[in-house]
Length: 447
Figure 1: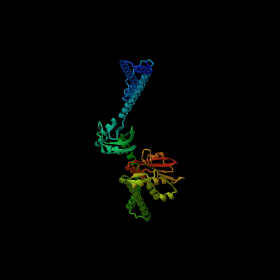
Figure 2: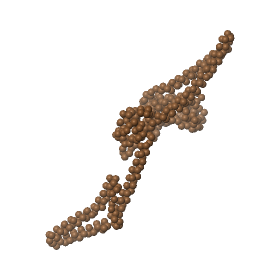
Figure 3: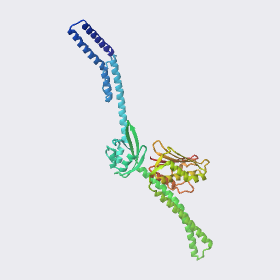
Figure 4: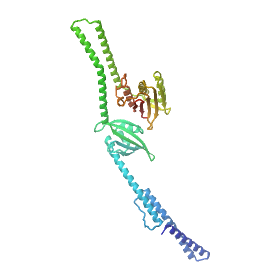
């Protein structure tokens, strides 16, 4: 029976019973008849309430099934065209759709979990209290562990790694060397902080870059040996040739027991002077090499970048004016501060400014821009840009190699020193350039 018809029928029967009860009371009917109708009315009221609540019970059962993720229960369908039947059909359709969505979600979860586990990069996720959520196979292999319940347990594996994981913020990275049964590993540690359903989660990626570092190290050594060999041979070859010439000439004079004319003595003195000059050049070259290998440990302090830029402008004012260079400095926000060694950072910036001045010697428009800001990942960036001739693409990949230089006069260690200083500050230096448009050096500090 249709729900509405059943509800209306029960209400009509209750109304009729109330009418007869009133009639009997007014006409002085017997106690038995009145009592009978009172019992009948109470029973009808109970049945009416129970009938009215039957649909609510089904809705409540339906919602309980959803709450408990139970999509297997089905409501009976008689296909009799009643509203109750229609309601059951709708309930079953919704449960079927939720069941399908749940199955798809579970499949996606298992898929991504499988991908997560089989990645060659080690991945660890943990909550704010340190409880590990996911630890993939690669991370277990790198850390040489079978299980990890709390991130604090990593301290037993490597204290530096534990400290890096806790201190690094989103976008931060650090190189950590750890001992492993297969040998020393160089791990690149990268951290991302996430917020999921108001729960803070940290994702840590670990990548073993030992082989890449060894390959780059070998390549760097080969480049360094080539440059050292080239520079040393350039100095020694003329020294050796000139010394042999003077020696042969003197030996000839001794064998012939001949006196040495004043003109020849002047030539000998000039040759010895040339040898001395080239030897000093070689000594200076070795001195530059030693300075590259002995960078002092940074003395970290708070640096107000705006004040730093003002000091640089004052220091370089004469060179800016003599070269007719327009300088633009910008700091955003104005109170931006940096934690580092001011003397070393000044040395890097002075070197970059000198490079910019040299690059703009033949430029029509001479503009040097020094900008400091915070990028989207929270890192402090200082950029030094010039409107010079730019750097050729072939040279861009070599400018940080020690003793490589594009200048006619230069030691080629300035940018190498700058890169090492930035690495001592846990930062990096990058360059972008376009011929005819200028060059920008980018100092990146992990705030």
